[in-house]
Image 1 (cartoon, rainbow, N blue to C red):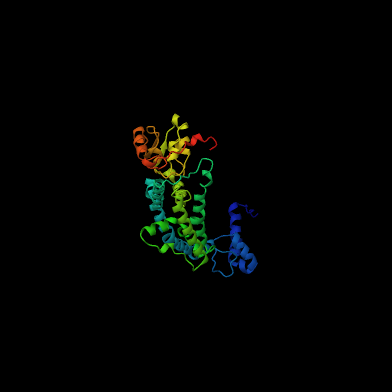
Image 2 (image 1 turned 120 degrees about the vertical axis):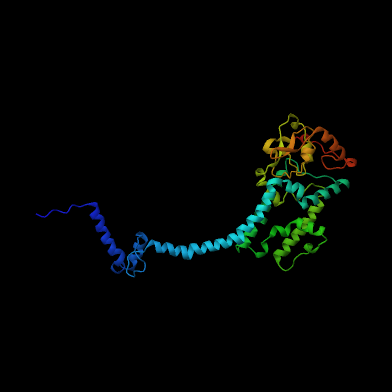
Length: 350
């Protein structure tokens, strides 16, 4: 009597292998093109795509094809993009941030030429006895978002849209076209070319006309207000994004006299009233330019300091304050023309 064949898993697997051999080698002829397309997507295996009657397609040739014609080409393009776009951008921006890491917001208060020009004009206004205008606590918040709008729209948004072809090519560098510093610094070199208004295009005419109007406004406003353009400058908001990463910073400790004193607020060119009532990180406001005037005019020892890696570079002091006010008032009026504003805290509605 013949022995019965025992159904083992091995035999079952071999049966499936034989069936699939016919499917993968001859399936194209047996099942038709439509079925082969579906099977090829569902049954990846080592069956040769060069077999014209196959019922499957080897995933390895698909992988090679994708690597050769798509991924490889994409990497080449990405390399070109990296070399021509990302690396130059990283070097340019990285150089700035390397310096910014050490200087922090002192870029604005100590380096920026436009800030220096505005301060010089303001000093002229003080000596001419022009009235002083300033933002009070009740309205200073209305102008502060403008610098972020300038950054998002003129520095980041419009140039990117122009590069993508979604905006006019003339908007490739719109902030530079309206920046008053472009006019101020070129005029200081006796170059009046930048004042000329372009008439070749409507966008160019609008941007250049806006630049001239803004420049004129800043020059006139600086006679009666401190740092008028700095309040809307996108570089101030750009710096504010990373100010907490720098070891250079303004530090203020809590002091019981701060509730009654407002001299540091009056001294601040950016009308940062928080410096008078806050301490710690909140006192180092995003609009701060690290000019140090608040520390100069604080009448108490080391209440306000400028530190670098925790090392005191400058700090407020009573003796320093006494000597400073003999030369110039917190408002910037020279000694022979001192006109004190009333303390901010005296305005209960402010």
